[in-house]
Length: 284
Length: 150
Image (tube, rainbow over all chains, first blue to last red; front, side, top):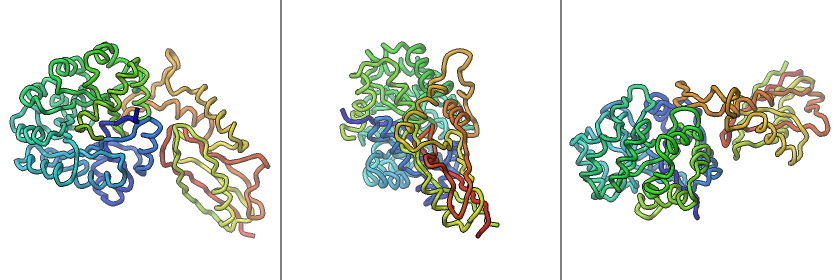
């Protein structure tokens, strides 16, 4: 078994990138809202090593209309991915902009990015708003997954109402060939997110949830008490991917927490690697 | 009077790790021009420490292991659970590394040694360690040299 894939990281603290692009410091502090020290990329790779993670998906957010800001542009994601072959770059587009589908095509076909990140709470749109449908249609044509922020958001100004799982049902139903990932287990609406995943095979969940206590105790609550572990193990084993939400959560701690829950080794292999490989079209 | 403040960076490669920084301290003192004085070594971080001990691999394992016994990363249940498990708005994330802060408090964050004839005066077995409790991370250590030239 190869090492795992972390399907949810934000490279906002990568020091080399902040030194080259000082505006990224402001994006990290004021838009993404993360106050930790900037660190060399090497630190993230070392943390992946000790967590048993081979590769990490790195995510931008295009919040041009809602915040007049981007938390990494697609070009900057390409740039950070050039620093290590262990990084898998996703694109982001602004669904409020008419040219968003074309921007997505450019990011995938010309820049070589592998998926799409959308954050309805920060970008201020409802996932089932028909305005965003051309973006979904283009993602489906391009055969790339969409990773949606879902559930609670920490950033000031980001409203929880945009993250409710039921706002994603129309997308799952209307684009059955489009794989969508609801991040953070859509907490606190884990039951609703699980219901969606049970009903729609193109709905995946990522594990990057931490809203109180610590990863070990929080995930034990969300994945064994809010929803029994058996539901994930038996019914959703092919629809869960490991995500840390680094740097809000450390990769090492999140990986350890998931491994401590009591999943079978076969299910852990799916969560940590194989399901992500499917989403990435079989090539990680 | 010579007063110098140096900042050195080390990158820890593990979750917990002892890194011998004695050579860096010695070099900075010898280059400072201070013949008689004091060197102060202080970590800039609250989940790391500065410890002086014998420079052997077995202690490099024993010390973090027993600090982990005293302040385990997984919080103990009941009265000794960690209040630090909560959202920190200034960091935009939860604090869940109370154990690493506690280790830093127990082990200490600084040390100092005399300088004599331009060299650090240490006991024969003493080494200066930067101790990582929450790595891997790039860390800063302050080394301040105060003394008189010969």
